[in-house]
Amino acid sequence: MSQKILNIDRDSPESKYRQIVNSVLDSVTSGELSVGDQLPSVNDLCKAWGYSRDTVLNAYSELKSLGVIKAIPGKGYYIESAHVNLTHKVFVLFDELNAFKEELYNSFLSALGDDAFVDIYFHHFNRKVFDSLLTENNGAYTTYVVMPARFLGTSALLQSLKGRIIVLDQLPDDLSGLFPAVYQNFENDTFQSLLSGKELISKYNKLIMVYPGGKEPEGQFKGFLRFCHEAGMPFELISDLNNRQVSKGECYIVIWDRDLVKVVKAAQEVNLEIGMDIGIISYNDTPLKKVVANGITTISTDFVAMGKTLAQLVMSKKRTQLENSSSLIVRGSL
Image 1 (cartoon, one colour):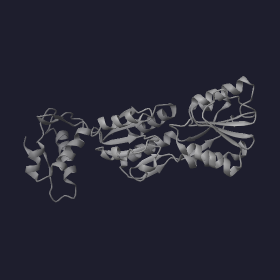
Image 2 (cartoon, rainbow, N blue to C red; image 1 turned 90 degrees about the vertical axis):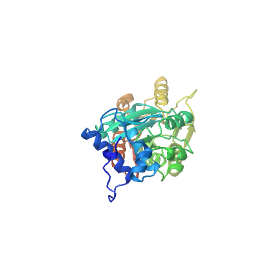
Image 3 (cartoon, one colour; image 1 turned 60 degrees about the vertical axis):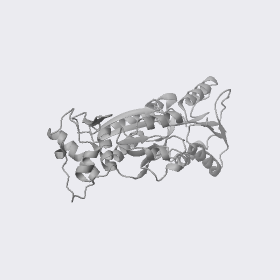
Image 4 (cartoon, one colour; image 1 turned 120 degrees about the vertical axis):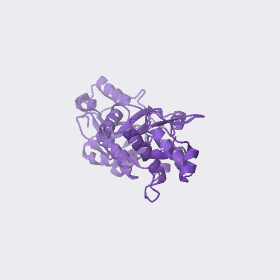
């Protein structure tokens, strides 16, 4: 096929790679190229314009990630879609789906509007699944939004992806400064939230955190310990509520909703009044927690705001790392 589809200005400050991408998109929009038309081969473009193979391959890779072209082994590159209005094709990898992350995701989609196509995947805290999903989808998207959870040593894999990387939620030390991010500072958020509720918490004899360990952010228990030491609050750190007899004067901090259910039931079974005889603080606010047991006090970030911030980061292509802070939302359980 002729190279006339390429509108190249050798004196333009725009990169050669970007000119190839934009020229193909413009030709599809104008009708010069239609679905099924073959593009010039990589070698033909290199010879015609003096480009390196990497320049042409990177341009074709982005066009593939946008769904505009496809590669047929042994034959070449062809126009696959005439829909070129999408500027972002986003791969989202969450650790798991729950009520508050669904709220985050819906906010993210709403803020993106119609200018992006989004696929969502889940690794369920399984490192092999995390690695394979990213490897299998390398080059298929323009942007990769990744929740690395507590995984360490992911930087090499993330840096190998052909697209923009944005880290979401937890920000492991080895990724700090490497990629744009929207993250939570779990240690500081926990400490500051508990400090803001110190007067209410001090009504109780002991503060108990249920921290199973494994996939929870370490900053949660670090912030808890910091508060207890600085406030002089008697405390206990336990991994589960199995065979636990809740007692009057205790205040429980629970990370997972299954433990929230257990401690509410345990208090009811021994006729302890939640918010008076026993205190409860839960992580991550949801609509249900506003009404359960006269309202559950939570330590929570604003997930709707987090989704909007993430969308802005995707659309702006800034390289900043933005902290989405949390606060204590006081209700009847404290």
